[in-house]
Image (cartoon, rainbow, N blue to C red):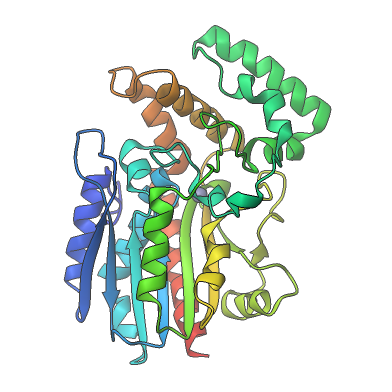
Length: 360
Ligand SMILES: [Zn+2]
């Protein structure tokens, strides 16, 4: 049985989020349009609710759908937080801002990327200083994203990828594939060459709405990496920094700096959480990604490769596309009581830690 906080589509999630947000006292709901439509031609928006005093100096922020389809997980956590009455626990000097579907295109099309085929967490880089930092990617690009997606072409591409893994080890393979690249616009984990529409929307949300904040705590929801149902708390700050120490004070010793989670996790550059302190120089920012595991990394990768083929070479509007779309959804969301219970329980705990941390 699906927990009622989770939705079966972007449109249903958006409607549920807006309903739940409107029902909270002292809430102001707003939305920002996205420049590309959904699969049924529908308008897409990033929805934002602000709860509590407009000029609050402390703000608890949650965000879903940075990686589109991962919004199925994060939206559920946000809706549950709203409907559970957690807003009533906020202190009088504290507000909450929930950002629903940062990348509504990916959410609605069940893709991880934006309509520019960009991974939003590889897009917050200094584009002027971009060198090709991932030449390794070029070596396996044609096998990761073969021209045909048939059992035969997949099999022969897999032989090449297996050979690469055997030669370089799995951790290096993960880094090469998912560390981010800025040279193959139709490839995987592409960071782009300029800020995407979703990047600009998010930047506007952060700089305009948090201009008066002095203390900001952010949880950005993700899924698809790590053990099934386990919520890894990943700090954007480097170990040894004050921000990292503060993050551990808030969330406990299980917080890990990004890139130290093991062979499945790549060291990345260009995630938005890392960029927030520079956008809010007047505030102390404590940001974490909360990453929920689903299925194994190779199963996730295969879904992303199939999806990439579908959108760059195939036709996502055909009847056959549904098989691949289901494959992608299953890689980032699990329709089981246990998984959903784990997501909601750990999300609730993390949000309480964040709200308590803001009060310190
Ligand atoms: Zn993610």
